[in-house]
Image (cartoon, rainbow, N blue to C red; front, side, top):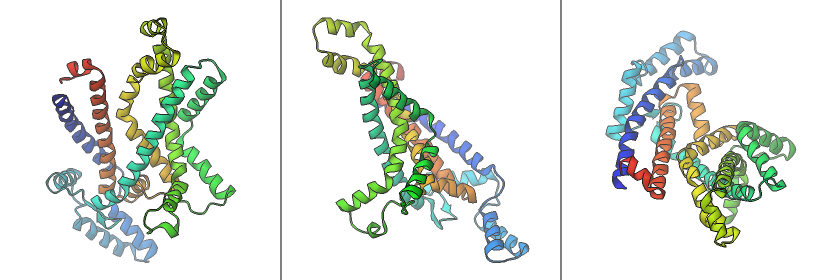
Length: 335
Protein backbone atom coordinates (compact mmCIF):
# COMPACT_ATOMS: atom_id res chain seq x y z
CA UNK A 1 0.00 0.00 0.00
CA UNK A 2 2.88 2.37 0.77
CA UNK A 3 4.39 1.74 -2.66
CA UNK A 4 0.99 2.37 -4.22
CA UNK A 5 0.77 5.72 -2.41
CA UNK A 6 4.30 6.75 -3.41
CA UNK A 7 3.61 5.93 -7.07
CA UNK A 8 0.49 8.08 -6.99
CA UNK A 9 2.33 11.00 -5.36
CA UNK A 10 5.22 10.77 -7.83
CA UNK A 11 2.83 10.79 -10.78
CA UNK A 12 1.04 13.84 -9.35
CA UNK A 13 4.14 16.06 -9.20
CA UNK A 14 4.49 16.56 -13.01
CA UNK A 15 0.76 17.26 -13.22
CA UNK A 16 1.07 19.95 -10.56
CA UNK A 17 4.02 21.54 -12.38
CA UNK A 18 2.11 21.65 -15.67
CA UNK A 19 -0.92 23.11 -13.91
CA UNK A 20 1.23 25.82 -12.33
CA UNK A 21 2.63 26.82 -15.73
CA UNK A 22 -0.78 26.87 -17.42
CA UNK A 23 -2.38 28.73 -14.52
CA UNK A 24 0.29 31.41 -14.38
CA UNK A 25 0.19 31.90 -18.16
CA UNK A 26 -3.61 32.23 -18.24
CA UNK A 27 -3.62 34.73 -15.38
CA UNK A 28 -0.97 36.85 -17.09
CA UNK A 29 -2.63 36.64 -20.50
CA UNK A 30 -5.08 39.57 -20.14
CA UNK A 31 -3.49 42.99 -20.71
CA UNK A 32 -2.64 45.11 -17.69
CA UNK A 33 -1.27 44.46 -14.21
CA UNK A 34 -1.49 45.90 -10.72
CA UNK A 35 0.58 48.91 -11.77
CA UNK A 36 -2.17 49.83 -14.23
CA UNK A 37 -4.67 49.58 -11.38
CA UNK A 38 -2.51 51.98 -9.33
CA UNK A 39 -2.38 54.41 -12.25
CA UNK A 40 -6.16 54.43 -12.65
CA UNK A 41 -6.63 54.91 -8.90
CA UNK A 42 -4.25 57.86 -8.86
CA UNK A 43 -6.05 59.50 -11.76
CA UNK A 44 -9.62 58.83 -10.59
CA UNK A 45 -9.25 59.33 -6.84
CA UNK A 46 -6.20 61.54 -6.33
CA UNK A 47 -6.66 63.78 -9.35
CA UNK A 48 -3.13 63.15 -10.64
CA UNK A 49 -2.32 63.79 -14.26
CA UNK A 50 -1.76 60.87 -16.59
CA UNK A 51 1.99 61.58 -16.77
CA UNK A 52 2.36 61.67 -12.99
CA UNK A 53 0.26 58.56 -12.45
CA UNK A 54 2.06 56.70 -15.23
CA UNK A 55 5.45 57.56 -13.76
CA UNK A 56 4.44 56.19 -10.37
CA UNK A 57 2.97 53.09 -11.98
CA UNK A 58 6.20 52.44 -13.90
CA UNK A 59 8.23 52.89 -10.73
CA UNK A 60 5.99 50.44 -8.89
CA UNK A 61 6.22 47.97 -11.78
CA UNK A 62 10.03 48.04 -11.70
CA UNK A 63 10.23 47.85 -7.90
CA UNK A 64 8.07 44.73 -7.76
CA UNK A 65 9.44 42.96 -10.82
CA UNK A 66 6.29 43.35 -12.90
CA UNK A 67 8.37 44.66 -15.81
CA UNK A 68 10.19 41.36 -16.17
CA UNK A 69 9.18 38.74 -18.76
CA UNK A 70 6.48 36.32 -17.69
CA UNK A 71 8.95 33.41 -17.68
CA UNK A 72 11.21 35.20 -15.19
CA UNK A 73 8.23 36.11 -13.00
CA UNK A 74 7.08 32.49 -13.01
CA UNK A 75 10.46 31.05 -12.06
CA UNK A 76 10.90 33.66 -9.32
CA UNK A 77 7.50 32.69 -7.94
CA UNK A 78 8.26 28.96 -8.04
CA UNK A 79 11.73 29.50 -6.57
CA UNK A 80 10.24 31.39 -3.64
CA UNK A 81 7.73 28.60 -3.00
CA UNK A 82 10.28 25.78 -3.18
CA UNK A 83 13.17 27.41 -1.32
CA UNK A 84 11.45 29.64 1.25
CA UNK A 85 7.78 28.68 1.25
CA UNK A 86 7.12 32.20 -0.02
CA UNK A 87 4.09 32.46 -2.30
CA UNK A 88 4.75 36.08 -3.15
CA UNK A 89 3.43 39.38 -1.87
CA UNK A 90 -0.13 40.57 -2.29
CA UNK A 91 -0.07 44.07 -3.68
CA UNK A 92 -3.75 44.74 -2.97
CA UNK A 93 -3.92 43.26 0.54
CA UNK A 94 -0.43 44.61 1.32
CA UNK A 95 0.68 41.43 3.05
CA UNK A 96 2.29 38.09 2.10
CA UNK A 97 0.10 35.85 0.00
CA UNK A 98 0.54 33.08 2.57
CA UNK A 99 -1.22 35.27 5.14
CA UNK A 100 -4.11 35.92 2.76
CA UNK A 101 -4.44 32.19 2.10
CA UNK A 102 -4.21 31.38 5.82
CA UNK A 103 -7.05 33.79 6.54
CA UNK A 104 -9.46 32.61 3.86
CA UNK A 105 -8.64 29.01 2.98
CA UNK A 106 -9.56 27.37 6.35
CA UNK A 107 -13.01 28.95 6.24
CA UNK A 108 -13.50 27.78 2.66
CA UNK A 109 -12.33 24.23 3.40
CA UNK A 110 -14.51 24.04 6.51
CA UNK A 111 -17.59 25.07 4.54
CA UNK A 112 -16.71 22.67 1.70
CA UNK A 113 -16.21 19.74 4.09
CA UNK A 114 -19.52 20.43 5.83
CA UNK A 115 -21.23 20.53 2.43
CA UNK A 116 -19.50 17.29 1.45
CA UNK A 117 -20.63 15.48 4.59
CA UNK A 118 -24.24 16.61 4.16
CA UNK A 119 -24.23 15.84 0.44
CA UNK A 120 -22.77 12.36 0.95
CA UNK A 121 -24.99 11.29 3.85
CA UNK A 122 -28.22 12.71 2.43
CA UNK A 123 -27.47 11.83 -1.19
CA UNK A 124 -26.57 8.21 -0.47
CA UNK A 125 -29.51 7.82 1.90
CA UNK A 126 -32.00 9.29 -0.56
CA UNK A 127 -30.48 7.20 -3.36
CA UNK A 128 -31.05 4.00 -1.38
CA UNK A 129 -34.58 5.13 -0.51
CA UNK A 130 -35.41 5.88 -4.15
CA UNK A 131 -33.92 2.64 -5.50
CA UNK A 132 -35.78 0.44 -3.03
CA UNK A 133 -39.05 2.19 -3.96
CA UNK A 134 -38.64 2.28 -7.72
CA UNK A 135 -41.52 3.81 -9.73
CA UNK A 136 -43.34 5.02 -6.61
CA UNK A 137 -44.16 8.67 -5.88
CA UNK A 138 -41.15 8.78 -3.56
CA UNK A 139 -38.85 7.73 -6.41
CA UNK A 140 -40.43 10.32 -8.73
CA UNK A 141 -40.11 13.10 -6.15
CA UNK A 142 -36.47 12.33 -5.35
CA UNK A 143 -35.62 12.00 -9.05
CA UNK A 144 -37.13 15.43 -9.66
CA UNK A 145 -35.07 16.91 -6.83
CA UNK A 146 -31.96 15.29 -8.28
CA UNK A 147 -32.70 16.73 -11.72
CA UNK A 148 -33.09 20.23 -10.30
CA UNK A 149 -29.92 19.96 -8.26
CA UNK A 150 -27.87 19.00 -11.32
CA UNK A 151 -29.35 21.50 -13.76
CA UNK A 152 -30.12 24.73 -11.90
CA UNK A 153 -26.97 26.92 -11.72
CA UNK A 154 -25.76 27.51 -8.18
CA UNK A 155 -25.19 31.22 -8.75
CA UNK A 156 -28.84 31.53 -9.80
CA UNK A 157 -30.02 29.84 -6.61
CA UNK A 158 -27.74 32.17 -4.65
CA UNK A 159 -29.19 35.24 -6.36
CA UNK A 160 -32.74 34.09 -5.63
CA UNK A 161 -31.96 33.52 -1.95
CA UNK A 162 -30.23 36.91 -1.67
CA UNK A 163 -33.27 38.58 -3.21
CA UNK A 164 -35.64 36.81 -0.81
CA UNK A 165 -33.51 37.54 2.25
CA UNK A 166 -32.92 41.21 1.46
CA UNK A 167 -36.16 42.33 -0.19
CA UNK A 168 -38.71 39.95 1.31
CA UNK A 169 -37.37 39.28 4.81
CA UNK A 170 -35.38 42.51 5.28
CA UNK A 171 -32.16 40.73 6.28
CA UNK A 172 -29.35 43.30 6.33
CA UNK A 173 -26.39 41.20 7.49
CA UNK A 174 -25.27 39.76 4.16
CA UNK A 175 -21.58 39.28 3.48
CA UNK A 176 -20.24 38.28 6.90
CA UNK A 177 -19.88 35.21 9.07
CA UNK A 178 -21.06 36.82 12.29
CA UNK A 179 -23.23 39.64 13.56
CA UNK A 180 -21.28 42.66 14.87
CA UNK A 181 -21.76 41.67 18.53
CA UNK A 182 -20.18 38.24 17.92
CA UNK A 183 -17.23 39.36 15.75
CA UNK A 184 -14.51 39.20 18.39
CA UNK A 185 -16.39 37.27 21.07
CA UNK A 186 -15.18 33.86 22.31
CA UNK A 187 -16.92 30.77 21.02
CA UNK A 188 -20.26 29.99 22.61
CA UNK A 189 -23.50 28.33 21.64
CA UNK A 190 -25.00 31.71 20.77
CA UNK A 191 -22.04 32.50 18.50
CA UNK A 192 -22.34 29.13 16.78
CA UNK A 193 -26.06 29.70 16.16
CA UNK A 194 -25.23 33.14 14.76
CA UNK A 195 -22.64 31.58 12.43
CA UNK A 196 -25.16 29.02 11.17
CA UNK A 197 -27.72 31.77 10.55
CA UNK A 198 -25.19 33.54 8.29
CA UNK A 199 -23.72 30.61 6.32
CA UNK A 200 -26.73 28.33 5.86
CA UNK A 201 -27.52 29.63 2.34
CA UNK A 202 -23.97 28.85 1.15
CA UNK A 203 -24.05 25.40 2.76
CA UNK A 204 -27.52 24.62 1.41
CA UNK A 205 -26.73 25.64 -2.17
CA UNK A 206 -23.34 23.91 -2.34
CA UNK A 207 -24.81 20.79 -0.72
CA UNK A 208 -27.74 20.63 -3.12
CA UNK A 209 -25.62 19.95 -6.19
CA UNK A 210 -23.50 17.27 -4.51
CA UNK A 211 -26.56 15.68 -2.96
CA UNK A 212 -28.23 15.45 -6.36
CA UNK A 213 -25.22 13.74 -7.93
CA UNK A 214 -24.77 11.28 -5.07
CA UNK A 215 -28.47 10.43 -5.08
CA UNK A 216 -28.60 9.87 -8.84
CA UNK A 217 -25.47 7.68 -8.95
CA UNK A 218 -26.45 5.69 -5.86
CA UNK A 219 -29.93 5.03 -7.19
CA UNK A 220 -28.68 3.84 -10.59
CA UNK A 221 -25.91 1.65 -9.19
CA UNK A 222 -28.13 0.12 -6.53
CA UNK A 223 -30.83 -0.75 -9.07
CA UNK A 224 -28.22 -2.57 -11.15
CA UNK A 225 -26.82 -4.31 -8.10
CA UNK A 226 -30.24 -5.44 -6.84
CA UNK A 227 -30.70 -7.36 -10.10
CA UNK A 228 -27.36 -9.16 -9.76
CA UNK A 229 -27.32 -12.92 -9.33
CA UNK A 230 -25.62 -12.93 -5.93
CA UNK A 231 -28.38 -10.65 -4.58
CA UNK A 232 -31.02 -13.06 -5.87
CA UNK A 233 -29.11 -15.87 -4.17
CA UNK A 234 -29.09 -13.96 -0.89
CA UNK A 235 -32.84 -13.50 -1.15
CA UNK A 236 -33.29 -17.20 -1.93
CA UNK A 237 -31.41 -18.08 1.26
CA UNK A 238 -34.10 -16.33 3.26
CA UNK A 239 -32.33 -13.10 4.21
CA UNK A 240 -34.57 -10.17 4.99
CA UNK A 241 -34.95 -7.42 2.43
CA UNK A 242 -33.10 -4.96 4.66
CA UNK A 243 -30.17 -7.35 5.12
CA UNK A 244 -29.96 -8.01 1.38
CA UNK A 245 -29.88 -4.31 0.58
CA UNK A 246 -27.59 -3.03 3.34
CA UNK A 247 -25.18 -5.96 3.66
CA UNK A 248 -24.85 -7.12 0.08
CA UNK A 249 -26.14 -4.58 -2.45
CA UNK A 250 -25.17 -1.21 -0.95
CA UNK A 251 -21.43 -1.95 -0.35
CA UNK A 252 -20.98 -2.97 -3.99
CA UNK A 253 -23.03 -0.04 -5.30
CA UNK A 254 -20.78 2.40 -3.43
CA UNK A 255 -17.69 1.79 -5.60
CA UNK A 256 -18.40 4.58 -8.16
CA UNK A 257 -19.17 7.00 -5.35
CA UNK A 258 -15.83 6.18 -3.74
CA UNK A 259 -14.13 7.16 -6.99
CA UNK A 260 -16.25 10.33 -7.02
CA UNK A 261 -14.46 11.42 -3.85
CA UNK A 262 -11.52 12.29 -6.08
CA UNK A 263 -13.36 15.30 -7.47
CA UNK A 264 -15.88 16.00 -4.73
CA UNK A 265 -13.69 18.41 -2.73
CA UNK A 266 -12.91 20.65 -5.73
CA UNK A 267 -16.60 20.39 -6.70
CA UNK A 268 -17.68 21.50 -3.24
CA UNK A 269 -15.03 24.22 -3.26
CA UNK A 270 -16.31 25.60 -6.55
CA UNK A 271 -19.86 25.45 -5.22
CA UNK A 272 -18.81 27.35 -2.12
CA UNK A 273 -16.82 29.81 -4.23
CA UNK A 274 -19.74 30.57 -6.55
CA UNK A 275 -22.19 31.19 -3.74
CA UNK A 276 -19.65 33.01 -1.53
CA UNK A 277 -19.05 35.48 -4.37
CA UNK A 278 -22.78 36.26 -4.49
CA UNK A 279 -22.96 36.57 -0.70
CA UNK A 280 -19.59 38.43 -0.53
CA UNK A 281 -18.28 36.20 2.26
CA UNK A 282 -14.58 36.61 3.14
CA UNK A 283 -13.51 33.28 1.66
CA UNK A 284 -11.48 32.16 -1.35
CA UNK A 285 -14.07 33.02 -4.01
CA UNK A 286 -14.24 36.81 -3.60
CA UNK A 287 -10.45 36.92 -3.16
CA UNK A 288 -9.89 35.18 -6.51
CA UNK A 289 -12.35 37.40 -8.38
CA UNK A 290 -11.05 40.56 -6.74
CA UNK A 291 -7.38 39.76 -7.33
CA UNK A 292 -8.00 38.86 -10.97
CA UNK A 293 -9.84 42.13 -11.56
CA UNK A 294 -6.92 44.26 -10.35
CA UNK A 295 -4.00 42.12 -11.53
CA UNK A 296 -2.85 40.86 -8.12
CA UNK A 297 -1.32 37.89 -9.87
CA UNK A 298 0.32 36.04 -6.99
CA UNK A 299 -2.89 35.85 -4.98
CA UNK A 300 -4.81 34.49 -7.95
CA UNK A 301 -2.08 32.03 -8.95
CA UNK A 302 -1.68 30.71 -5.41
CA UNK A 303 -5.39 30.16 -4.87
CA UNK A 304 -5.72 28.43 -8.24
CA UNK A 305 -2.80 26.17 -7.37
CA UNK A 306 -4.43 25.35 -4.05
CA UNK A 307 -7.62 24.31 -5.88
CA UNK A 308 -5.54 22.22 -8.28
CA UNK A 309 -3.77 20.58 -5.36
CA UNK A 310 -7.10 19.67 -3.76
CA UNK A 311 -8.11 17.91 -6.98
CA UNK A 312 -4.86 15.92 -7.02
CA UNK A 313 -5.09 15.08 -3.31
CA UNK A 314 -8.70 14.06 -3.73
CA UNK A 315 -7.82 11.67 -6.55
CA UNK A 316 -5.01 10.16 -4.48
CA UNK A 317 -7.40 9.63 -1.56
CA UNK A 318 -9.96 8.05 -3.92
CA UNK A 319 -7.29 5.73 -5.34
CA UNK A 320 -6.29 4.70 -1.82
CA UNK A 321 -9.88 3.98 -0.84
CA UNK A 322 -10.44 1.93 -3.99
CA UNK A 323 -7.20 0.05 -3.39
CA UNK A 324 -8.38 -0.81 0.11
CA UNK A 325 -11.74 -2.02 -1.20
CA UNK A 326 -10.52 -3.83 -4.33
CA UNK A 327 -7.21 -5.78 -4.44
CA UNK A 328 -7.24 -5.62 -8.25
CA UNK A 329 -6.58 -1.86 -8.06
CA UNK A 330 -3.47 -2.50 -5.96
CA UNK A 331 -2.31 -5.22 -8.36
CA UNK A 332 -2.61 -3.16 -11.54
CA UNK A 333 -1.82 0.15 -9.86
CA UNK A 334 1.72 -0.75 -8.88
CA UNK A 335 1.16 -1.58 -5.20
